[in-house]
Amino acid sequence: MDMTFAEKILAKYSDLKEVAPGQIVTVHPDHLLTHDNTAAIIQKIKPELNKYGIYSKTLPIIVLDHVIPASSEKTANNHKIIREFVKNNEIKNFFDIGFGICHQLVIEKGLALPGKLLLGSDSHTCSYGAIGAFSSGIDRTEAASLLLTGETWLKVPNSIKMVLTGKLNPGVYSKDVILHIIGDISASGANYCSVEFHGDVRNFSIDDRFTIANMGIEMGAKNTLFFCDNVTKEYLNLIGIPDSSYSPIDADKDAKYYKEFKYNLTEISPVVACPHTVDNVKPIAEVSDIEIQQCLIGTCTNGRLSDLKVAADILKGKTINSGVRLLILPASKDIFEKALNSGIIEILVKAGGVLLPPGCGPCLGAHQGALAPAERCLSTANRNFKGRMGCKEAEIYLASPATVAASALYGKITDPRAVINK
Amino acid sequence: MNIWRYGDNIDTDMLFPGKYVYICSIPEEIKPHLLEDLDPSFSKNVKKGDIIIAGINFGCGSSREQPAIGLKSVGIKAVVALSFARIFYRAAINQGLVLIECPEAVKFYSDGDNVEIDMDNGKIIVGAKTFSFPKLPEQIIAIRDAGGLLEYTRKKLKKK
Ligand code: SF4
Image (cartoon, rainbow over all chains, first blue to last red):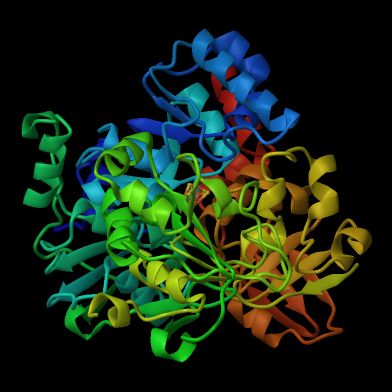
């Protein structure tokens, strides 16, 4: 029987010859990602941890990124509990504050590889599809159970085939592509499904793929996937991982898809997701001139070097509008260093940007860059839910780094093509 | 018994705002903020045995489990919706919170209708009409019957 990517990898991880959608299988993931929520997770299973210990030292990946540096005694204590847990259990993959956002680190440190299976107690765990891995989000309770047993159940999902054709025009980015798709199929358009990207994806770098895979959950997907190709291999070589250390999985030729969508990249223009749902997507012309008070460039969706570079190219030698605050949030220390050494940070700061430490920052409204009532933020993040940035009477708009940078110049939502072509 | 009626795409920030995610994790801490930005009257008036009826994609967004823990601990008997978001669905199973995906029943419901749920037979009665919903797979019923995933895991570890 011909199988999709999800079917093949779940068959492999459950030691079955074949599986079909709807079937429930037991799997042992290669890694389990947890972050600041590790404190709450281990709290649930204290007696069991004392008695049985963790399943393995190599299973967990723990990153302190959500509320960093700690914002209060409570969050500081959570961090402390996690550091002690890491030390006592000799956990191999631990990244303390300042290393960056968990999802960025999993990819950057080569912990997600083609053909691997990862689960994480964070909804954007689906990001590692960018590199050809199967990855999906779970909750804290399930993470606790996995820490002890190393296994869990997964339902084999239906698969959706997204076929991309053509090439993006200048001023249009992968963020516009994924927002366009979510606007088209809705925030539940891929519910419970595995979404595979096919077609002309060779022009998409790992950074571009990351942005798209990251937002799979915003259309309800279980996982998102770009197949391992030369772009993937080159990226992995660059971070020191030889082809021989992983086995990519492709979909079979006659695999059955639950749905198929086609998008012509040439026809996609810059778009903005408007409050308060990610699928409330509008062409930029419909929202330009909306005044904004805060701009955010960063997060696990768009905080990579290429994103900061796009913004710097737009802001070079200019100053942002005096009515706007521009927050810059590199996704990792490595990206931050590269941006520093290449002069990108200098450009962004000179233009008026405020630099935040690599981490989640204002993205989830827990600390830093919170909004006030009636304020509007234009952000490169992945969610614009009501209250997401700390205030339910504020509005969040989502767009590409180019759109956010161009908009920062004028204090209102601005089509980046107007600035880039000048 | 109250029936709480909500619309489509009720996201995890509406169910439990992100600003509390790293400071509240046990039921007592969660309860006062449950549905805070969506419906401030909920946490004050919710009673054991109440039912929530909602539209598509209930629980979309974050993987935070406070919404599932919170709804379970205030005694919500079931959330009946057109559809649920995936991670929330898992979280509900793990907490023993009952979710029923039954579009026909949701569409039929109008304000004031009486709603009864018969879990054993997979039936939901809205007003004078009865609707069926599919039974859960065995593995998942085993988790629910154990009292949630952690209890299930504890039993499994003991056996080893
Ligand atoms: S940057 Fe935002 S979306 Fe990404 S992991 Fe952090 S809080 Fe979640």
